[in-house]
Length: 380
Image (tube, rainbow, N blue to C red; front, side):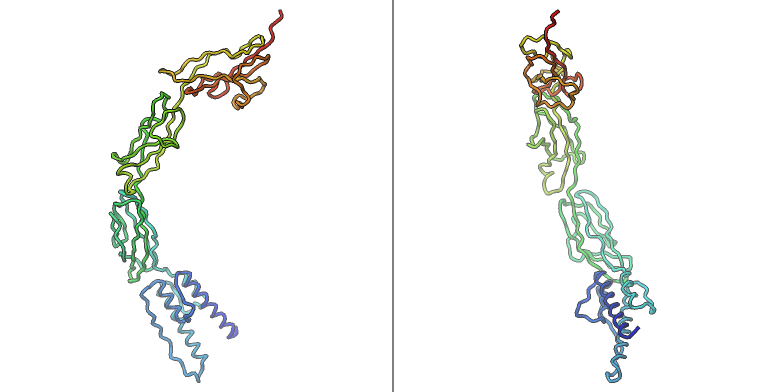
């Protein structure tokens, strides 16, 4: 290898060293010479390092600039090697300069790993702050910050206590010191969430329509004196009357809703069922054609006990077609007018008003199905 090739190889090695230092979070200014590289390496794990370079005396220029440069390069390499060793990584005199970049990557920089701690109002917490690198054991201390409300941090880095505020983000400016006296600092976020309150429905969710407002009986299982209300549906009313299914949501009120100390995401469902009618009729009914409309005949009775609400049933008619799937009936094809013409008709009886169901005869859901036929009179 020629001298020029060795020169280029050495320059590449220095470039790799610089890249490795930057990769570890260090800083090497573009206007600084190679004699600052060792300093930058030491600053990766010691913020109190001071430059203590001791280079050999230069020979008179008249003797040899080349010899001076060789001596200088050896000194720079040795200083970098010593900086790597001080960082806790073995680096023998036989390790080539081209391998120094990998050695630098092995240095365990003292740093605080914990970036955020999540706690909850009025809920005990115990969490160990984490650091890495340097020489354990670590000692923790505040730099400049308010103490966490309701909590303490020991010299061992244990954050414990019961937060006295909720829905807040506090910052703790912490310093960790290793056994050699090296330090690292970091701002740690303490996110204190509102306490989640849990609720339970103790009344059941399904009610029969009575015309009177209905409400769920919901209790808080965490806080007996919690103040809250339950709202229903998109209109967020405080009760429901009509038939249907409504989303019920717990809303905190009063002192429980203040200061963001509590929160809840509890939802439930309340359902108001309509009444059910029992339909009694002959499945197939036949009439003689007389140019008059013929209605399907049937009777109904209320299934539930109590005062029946308004409403009843409606009968729908459609020309009969073999293979019609009554489960997927298109009610747009039906009419409520009793048919006068000869033919065979499919009949569907549906509930109306506060009656949501009719007893099923066959097929259909909450519908009663039958067949009506109008034909010519027998001549016999």
